[in-house]
Image (cartoon, rainbow, N blue to C red; front, side):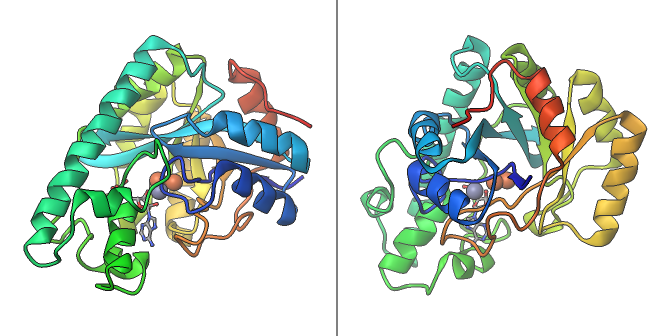
Length: 280
Ligand code: AMP
Ligand code: ZN
Ligand code: FE
Ligand code: FE
């Protein structure tokens, strides 16, 4: 069984539609794929219909933006009730914060790279959760930069003078909200030093107390030493361990299935979740 539990579509910052991600997952020989767009579930229905068509099983999920001790972190939520009010309100709040923040970044950039918010929107599908990758696409379309990665290495880096953070809930509250909605919370790439500061060991204790179910360990942004540290934490706290690609279509080098999750972990997630995996 080939199981990849973290991908993005054009519902957020992936370059392919949800249906295209399902087709790509089938072509890559995956048996199960999770669609986990940033702060939204808007791609789920299209993905579910396509998953049945192409014969791949779909884990419905969301990558939830959060903060922990001043550090920006991501939580993967799986199989949650998408209509649960508490989580719905929290995600809506984050999405509007993302839009305000995107506009601010464009305003700052415009001094050196003339660009408008409409140029950014021109790079998005309807209803997209907007992020820095779409601003990168607008910079590329205007001929300022060759690709997204060049943008993230320079003007869109969190160290650049154009950087603006955005509101996101505390990770403790987010874990509780995901559980309240019947979802299964997994800490996404917690040791990805390329993204910025990483959280200390003690943070996992707090999150586990709040209801954290697992840790995404096999991820290309984790060094071997980091994976070893995270395995020790998962064993100590009795947390599930996942692996995944964090596929973004052509927007990033990550390839579907480059990291995988064990079948018994899939079973455990499905047992804990309010929804079922969509199977053909
Ligand atoms: P934001 O969520 O708006 O702060 O933007 C950060 C997101 O951009 C992360 O979730 C990354 O996965 C995504 N991203 C997409 N393409 C790239 C890239 N080429 N380099 C770095 N991050 C990227
Ligand atoms: Zn992303
Ligand atoms: Fe992430
Ligand atoms: Fe991601």
